Image (cartoon, rainbow over all chains, first blue to last red; front, top):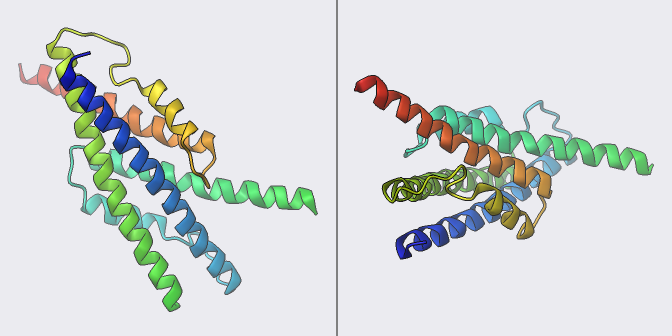
Length: 96
Length: 96
């Protein structure tokens, strides 16, 4: 592999790790929002406002990824979240 | 909305924007790797080594997102990429 390619691959690995840590921070923050809302007795179908956030993000998209793809990626990220919650609830029920 | 919730929602919006910019940087870097490989006549089914990168990322996962979800999110991100390339190629052909 040429030096230029090696440099780019290292750069890509670094970006991936940063993405992974941001995704984890995002999940923790979304988790906290849902936890507080549940504690306050606020019950919403979309407690973290996913649709609004995704629309907002598309309007800030610097490219080169097109808006449809950006929206699909973020929907995949946010969809992963309630599934996790549901699994946790199921596990809790199994433990009772 | 309580002050605590407002603060968390602002924090989440900030994380989302950082994610969006990192995803764009990632797409540009992957694009550059593919461009150089094409120029050097290197033809690979997986030029940016997606499977290896996804496995590597799962091994660095700090949580709370489970590994399966991390891998699904990154596969969605990387799968978006060749689709874009294919569309560009199609468009180029239409222009010729």
